[in-house]
Every structure is written in structure tokens, then in C-alpha cells.
Image (cartoon, rainbow, N blue to C red; front, top):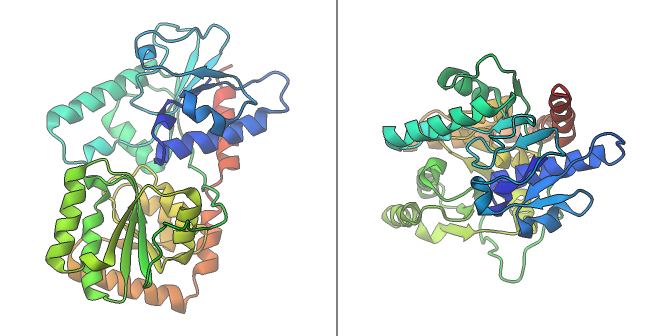
Length: 349
């Protein structure tokens, strides 16, 4: 049973993780005689996953009363803080994927950190084996949690396939070269630190795509832009289609993600898949994903960020890095991830 409960939140990293990994596992097992896949999924997400595998429809009451799982050997819990996990049925083995411990790095109270950590530990206690999506995540888990000698695997995410690019009639089309960034609008994404680059590079626009998770932070971005007098060159696009996303990746001057908390960073590999120069914070898992094919902000001071941006663009052009960046993105493969996950499943039966 592959848990797709997080697909109830479209346009998020967890949505595309469940979609891509689920579809690739389904394809891999389509010719198997002795292994079959089922999805635990919200009703509206089921068309995206198709009808080739059975679905158990997810409902909120199942937090308290899970569906019958007597015909299943394995439950793959794809979100570390999920409330949908078979606690009473001890016969079914549980694979727990941990994406991040971002709550440790966000500006939350100690009580909230302890609450999140306690719930994560409860899920680890129920799990038979654990998967982390980056080595940084694995180190965090080993340091802050008690895995009780359970196997802990690192399986990197794949690069999402970008569809043919296209803007709709009402899509925003930049008038200047533009920086592109993508993610849920919330403080940990740290988007506001990019605004001084607009003041120092007046030939650029900044486009940020993503749903708003924190209206207060959205207002702060707009207020900061007005104070710097760069608001005319800032566009917050909200949620965008896959075709729009593909167009912005392919046509941007550079991609930037100054996030302070990432367990992996799917937009990074997406931008790299079309060979774009990528500028990242040096926080959490981002250096692991970008490796030496990205440029890093060691701090968020205006002078430092401008120096990194200027020298990074010069290096990108002089060394003609596009092909090498695309090659690097190919290290992140959903096919490769599926093989590793199937090995984890099979170790339990």
C-alpha cells in the first residue's frame, strides 16, 4: 500500500513526490505476477494516479480508524509526520520515508519543536525500516531521533519531467530577463533576501511562483520590495500550471532558492534539468543536491549575495556549464529510486 495522502495538497513537493514515485513503482510492477501495488489516495488525486492499481480512498476519520489492511504486507508511509499509519495491525510492515526535520530550522517555539519531534519519534517507533531523501536528512534523523538499530536508507528523489513549455493567454510574460524562484510562500523559503539583487541589477525582474501558506510573509515581501523601490520588478505568480512552470524554467536568466530549510529541493533538479545557473543558500540539504554545479549564498548580506551572483553568472558563461549541469541533474532518477525502494520493500518479506 503506497500512501498518497499528501496529494491532497496540490502544487507541493510532497504531491509530486507521491505522484512521480507512485507512477514509476506502478509501471515497474505492472508485469509482476506476485507483487501488486495499491494506493491510499484522496479521491480527487486518483485520476492522476490512474486506474491500473486499486485505490483505497483517504478520509480524515481514518486518522482514528484505519481501513482494513489484512490483504497487505507493507504500508509505505510517505510523510514522516503522517497520522495515517497502521498502529494496531502489527502484521503489516511499515516503511517510513522522512523528507526533512525542517521544524528544527524554522522559527518556531521550543514547545512546537518538541511536539513535532515527539510525533516523528512515534512514527519511527512503528516503522520497520526508514528511508531518508538525502544524507543530510539521514544525519539529522540519527542525531535527533532514536532509530533503535532499525535500517536507515538514503534514497534520493528523481528529477521531475518537465512538459513542453507554454504560457496561457493570461500568464505573466516578463518584459525583462528574470530570476525565477519556486516554492510555497512561507518564511523558511526566505524569498525576501533576493530583493536587493533587483536593486543592484535593474535590468532584471524576479518571478516567484507558489501557493501562499503565510499571508503575513507575503505582505512582508511586498512591503520590503516597496521600501527598496523594486516592487515594479517583482511578480508573485501564485500557483502555476506545469506548462507555465516549464516555460519559466526554460526562459529564466537564472534560478534562485535561498531557502533555510530543505530536505531535498525538487525545484533545484528541475532547473538543472534544462541547464540553468542555480543560486542556493548553503543551508541544510541544498549543497548536497546542487553539489559543485550550483552557486551558494553563505550569508544573506546584500554585498555577499551580489558578489556570488555576479561571479556565478561569469563562471557559468566562461565555463559553458549548461551541459554539465544537465548531466548532473541526471543523477536524480525516479527509475533509480524505484529500484532502491523495491529493494527496501523486498527486504521485509
